[in-house]
Length: 243
Length: 304
Image 1 (cartoon, rainbow over the protein chains, first blue to last red):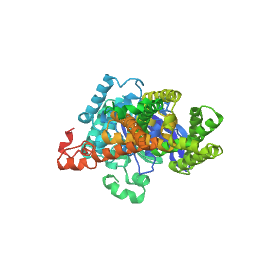
Image 2: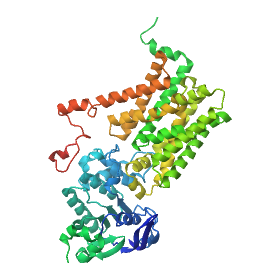
Image 3: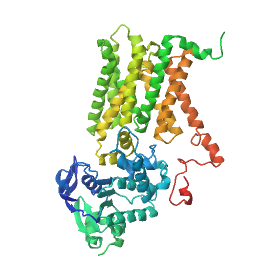
């Protein structure tokens, strides 16, 4: 999957400028930047949810201009109605049920696949629990199970480590590692430099433009971080950075 | 001669009461089902707006002698498009746009109807319903349109649920939330139209919101919520109609009052979540899945 000269302008501002990136199978790419840097915008473009103003997103030499089942998108947890009366299994099954028969209930084999996907993220014991009763980390794991059920080649995750507990963080890192080992393409957005360094092999520093891209150790220099996060904001984040 | 059950059967000797009971059961069930989605989408205010927005359509078609179903749907479509255009402009909040157009539309209906000789009676019937005037034809229409609405909701249930729960994910699945919202509003306006004769313009909102809100207090499962909401709608309708018959209360008002009383009773005494029962249960150390949230730190978290 790649982007060429990707730009997105909204009515009163530009969100992305001339982004050229490549995402290869078997690689995990982290998109790092401050709030408003265009991380979510970039992921939505990759998912085919947002048409770019200029440039294009390509998946295997074909232009992505609409959502595609081969690309799974895991949205931020904050955009969800947690009071909705729906249980964990039914949330996971959304990854598949929109493509099954309108008239009949979800077939049993899909339900078994749903439970299997929940088992992969350690949530099958909670299959019948209302989604809002779970902790933030558990909710994130259910969303990843929903993406797994879609059986995609590309996983796009928006802030998967934000507001989740430590056990979930390491579990999500492990799941992403397994998916990468299985030859999937993983892209996640984060503002957490430590998570980006720990769990991706390519790091993109983004602040409307691509500041730098490459292996985390090469990319995270003081000058690059300065250019990405600005002066004041960078000092606490620089602790782990190399000069 | 008079059996103890005769107060229950006596009203059914009148043909108009048979029609009234059939109509209120139909409306109670259909509004109960539709209301579940209205409350889950947070569209209670939109429901009220639609009830008023169809008003000029009903009035114009009754003046011209056409089908009031067509008139109401046309009016609802025009108003919901106007709301859509104004709120998409980004200059005003969505609920502000709703407020402007639904009262404007309502006023247009009142203006047209006020030019007629039978103004007082007509407007009372439209605002508060005239359940005793329900004809066989009205029943048939209510039944057919109601079935169409329920079947459409069944076929679209996955899209509606996905969009209500997680709009961004729905978009990533290629769904167009705006288009599905328009379909939903069309079904909502049809539901409102077939309820106008029985409960009237002002009180239809209660049939949409109160049974569904009561059901939400009793269950966290969508399927169960729909069944319970439909049942409460029907029961409130029947009980309210008896109350109206024996006490001489306006039927729409007594139906809504019964539904409200059921809501208050459930809010206070529902097992587990009721304002009073929960206090008692907590004292007795019963747990409830929705109150006792799971956390990863809690070793008891695997208990379901």
